[in-house]
Length: 324
Length: 224
Image (cartoon, rainbow over all chains, first blue to last red; front, side):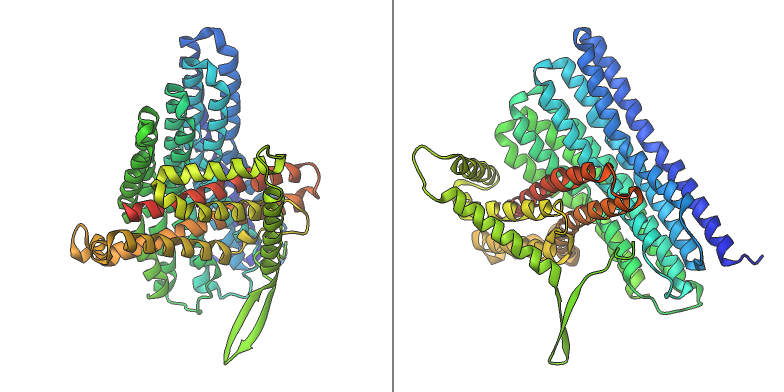
């Protein structure tokens, strides 16, 4: 079957748009559901302030929604992009963009539901610190969105950068791989960052005086939990900006595609694991503020060890790109 | 949309190599320097026992970051590294805010700025580690848990530079790309100011703080 370039590019754009929004709808919905569930339990504990809890729930859900909104923006752009005179390679880029945004929105969407839910519970437990809890929730959820923002950046670059003077083989594989690398790696990081943010809201409700230490530990923990997504971004940038020599051999293309897949899948676990380490540290910093510095240091060392698997994945992808 | 991913460069041939200077980034960095020096003069000029508003801002700021450093390192180390931490945060936060002014761009949007600051933090952390622990104890840490894990431990340390630099770069550049695309699509009506406030002021401040905290924490991991 022979398809001309214009048909192929349109096909890829529509498929990409569908994938972006379809996958992008998963995460935020789960996160918002979690927030709503915890809000219900919070209201039943302390019905007198149900108004405050309801308000906080809506704010938390609105922030959790942003990952899906990013996916919606990319999907609509893909559907209505001007594609006159596009070459075959553009199709690969658009498909990569769709997958990148769709996959990347999953983790952040689920993750940013946790701080919302825990903040609702916290308000029911400790109504006096409602403002601080909402602020902390907003900071935590905003940082959770970083992996989704990385995915959106890669998706936008894939959509709008000019790849037309690159050889079709093996650049198509590099572009699809670039999308998969950031998209998949963002799943774990977004989820892990949410775990840390949720624990910080719980901790502040438990011990309102610890707010400074808890927020600092949360930010550092989340930042380190994002490292796998950053490795994914790095691999995507290399795949997008490096000029690959033309080669009809299938192995050259597959090496680039696997480089993206390797970093993408390799980033999921470390992201969640780092999030667990951060969650534990944040939770116990709230209970034991005097030893916050030590807890943070142990958290970092633990995260560095759990991150080593992401580093193995990055080493293998770099070998696939530069050596093979 | 063509300007996505393009950089204005000055290329100077030098002994068969090319020196590339990113002119806009240099100019923006100098603007940040000038603003910081002005801030420094405004806060420390006419110091009084009854402080004026600018002096209060400066004192609060320094106090806050000094306490943060003291929490992570100890008192003696904090005296040494406190000024570095304050300077780093001030430079980063002002750099990240610069993009909200039309025609100005964040110096941190260029990978060279975060990468060199990350390298600086890395060098300082390892210098502090060697100085407090001695070279032998420092080198021994790389051979844990087994001696053959050394190459991976070294890569793990180098990956810290990559992650700290790309975190800042990705957030700031990501924000500016999103603002660029949305402004283009909506003809700069209604939405861009809110996006500027979110990505420029809010995310910019958080990322500057995260970068500073990570630099402190990397030092504290090395010296303990």
